[in-house]
Each structure stands twice: as C-alpha cells, then as structure tokens.
Image 1 (cartoon, one colour):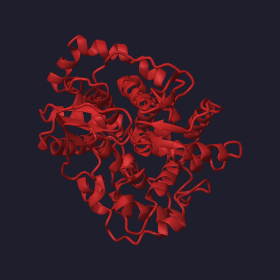
Image 2 (spheres, one colour):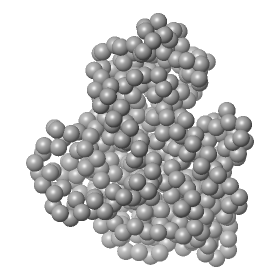
Image 3 (cartoon, rainbow, N blue to C red):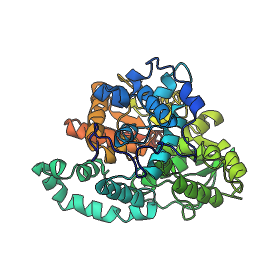
Image 4 (cartoon, rainbow, N blue to C red):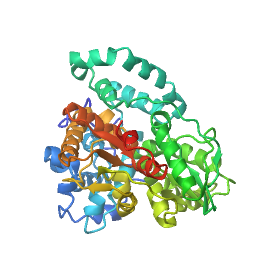
Amino acid sequence: MGDVPRDVLGPVAGGPAEPAFDGDHPPRRDLVDDCVHCGFCLPTCPTYVLWGEEMDSPRGRIHLMKQGLDGEPMTASMVSHVDSCLGCMACVTACPSGVRYDRLIEDTRQQVERRHPRPRRERALRGAVFSLFPYPRRLRLLRGPLRAYRASGLRAAVRRSGLLPRLAPTLAALDALAPRIGHATRLPARIPAQGRRRATVGMLTGCVQRAFFPEVNAATARVLAAEGCDVVLLPRRQGCCGALSVHNGRRAEARRFARALIDAFDGAGIDRFVVNAAGCGSSLKEYGDLLRDDPAYAERAAAFAGGVRDLSELLAELGPVAPRHPLPLTVAYHDACHLAHAQGIRAQPRELLRGVPGLELREFADPEICCGSAGVWNVLHPEPAGQLGERKARHVLATGADLLVTANPGCLMQIAAAARRLGGALAVAHTAQVLDASIRARPVTDLLR
C-alpha cells in the first residue's frame, strides 16, 4: 500500500485546522449526499473484497469526502484510502441511487495531488511513472533494451533468483508485466477505406498501446478500413490523451494533453474518433467536463468528446460488411472496467465476437471484480494488484478457453502475467486482433502465439 502505514494520521502543511479541500473543484456535496450507504457497492469493490475495511469501500471513501467538506483536515490515513481506490467504477454500475462516484473520486484525487505532501520515495516513484508512461516516444526507447534483456537470458535468471519481488516490488511488477516485444508497425497518416467509404474516422494510437502493442493498432486500422472507413491516424502529431493523468489527479497535465490532441485533429474532417483502449476511451468521452472551465476549448472539447467511440461501439453502429472467415477456437472475454462500467459497453464486443464463424464465447466467474491493472495502479500497488490479477487469471483459466480477449492493453498484460505466476499458459489478444484475423482469413495459430 505504499510508504504510508494505513493507520498513521498526519495533517498537511498548514496545520490540523486547515480543511482537506480548497475551492478548486472539491468533491461536490450534492453528489456526496446522494450516497445512502446501502452497501450495494461492497461486493463489487476490489479493495473491499481484498481487505474487508469499510474505509476501503466506495461508501467509506465518500464518508471521508464528507468529513473533508465539513472541515476535517486531509490526513495521511485519508490519502491512503483514496489512493487505494482502483477507479474501476464497478460501484457506479452497482449503485441503485446513481451516485457519481466517478466524479467524486476524480475531484478528490486532484485535491490530494495538489495539497498532500507525499513521502520522498513515493514522490520519486510517481514522478518516474508520469515522466514515462504518458510519452510514447520515451516508451519506444525501452523496446530495444527490453528485447535485449529477454534475449540475453538475464530476465530468466532474475526470475529464478526470486530476489526482485523482495528487494524491489515495483521493478518486479514492471518485469512481470513487460510484454513480448514484436516488430514495430509504422502506420501512415491515413489509410483509405476498402470498397465504399462509410465514414471518416480519427484513431488514437495511444502511449503503451503504441509502444508495446503496435500490432493492436495495426489490426484496428485494418478492421476499420475493411469495414469502409477512411482512417486518419496522424501518428506524428498525436500524443497521450491524458487518461493516466486525469485518473490520478494530475488534472492540469491531463488538460494539456487533451488540448494538444484536440488541436492535432482539428480540421481533419473526421466523423468519429475511434479508441481501442478502454481507459483512454472513458477519458476522451469526458473531455467536455475536463475542459469546461477553458473558454478557448470548452466548446471544442464537448464536440470532440461527442464523437468519441470505442472500436466495438462504432463497428456495432455501422454494422459489419467485411466477410468473416472461420476461427475455430474458444474465447474467454474479459470486460475491461473502463469499457463496461465507465462507458457501459458490454454487448457490442460480445456480438462482434459471436459473429465470427467457429468461435465459441465463454463467460467466467466474478467478472465485475477488476483484474488489478487500473492504469498504473498495479505499478503503485504491486502486492494487492497481484492478488487481484491472480484471482482473475484463475477464473479465466477455469474456463479452459484457448484465448483471453479484452479491449485494454493494461488488462492484457496484467492477466497474462498473473497466469504465468500460477503456472498456466494463457494466450491473450485484443478484440481488434480477433476480428482482423477473421476478416483476413488468418490461421488460429496467429492468435495463440
């Protein structure tokens, strides 16, 4: 849980009399008051499931927010419980009262990030994470060293020693998550539609997706083109969408990324903006809220957000035209939290997968509980993230499916790493890769490598 013990209290600089929140977008009292503390959120909350602590449940954190609004100071204990939230939003879909926990935790986190003096080690770790992960060019520089690390046998030796998890849990988590590095696929600025053009779409290339899963982006672009879309990528102009930043309270940074992305596609003539990473999609759809106080961007951001579509969402809207060829395999589909809970997209990817001849879709137990990836939560909290990942991997492996399919790069890495720790062989793929293989009549072995 980081450097701060869960039972240690400590006020922020300024003394215990200083209220937890200032006037810059604190959690809204009317949203706090919507919570009737009924407890429907408890069985869907991963941290409550792990620890059974009231303050590590959504309603417990809302209680802490209420105390802050009532003038209580921001303590290290309060920050610890806020930090422990994965932001999976399973509580939002479970809540019968419609409590906007998503808005509440986001507003609380930006207060924490600005006002709470973190320990030096924690500041260093967070600084390193946010100096690297939102920058695709910096991530791309890691591809060569990671490939060499694997090929040299050093990685296997480090894992056999068992020392890394004890000496450096964060490095151990990063080592476990690192995917196999394939050949980088360079995408052009624009890919024309095949056959009759049905739409012109922009496409997010992303950060982690662009650096470590370029094959997912290539598959996404091919599927869109096959379904009659002109695909505008502009890979040299676009950067991070700001999702990691906004989900961790770094609002000013997220706004800079959002403005830059809006500017990159300004005048591109797109009908929709397509996203193939669930966490990115949920943030892009909230650009109107993120930039609502910016007079130069508020209107543009709202218009941009209104055109954002997840890949499966857009394909369901258009309807399939590209022929599907058989893929005789069994698939376990995992609902990425920010796709199912934040965007409400569950049926569309399943319908697309069921539309592939020969493919059998299998569901698994406890699908509502997050896999523990949650952006960079698994890097900041490696031990509980590992427990959640193994819980998810056990359920997936129990289906006996040939392939795990999901729509988020973090989930792919997290569940695959957990399955390896459990000694299970689990092939993973993005929804786009399955559709691409079916449309191009590729062999099943392409997906199971």
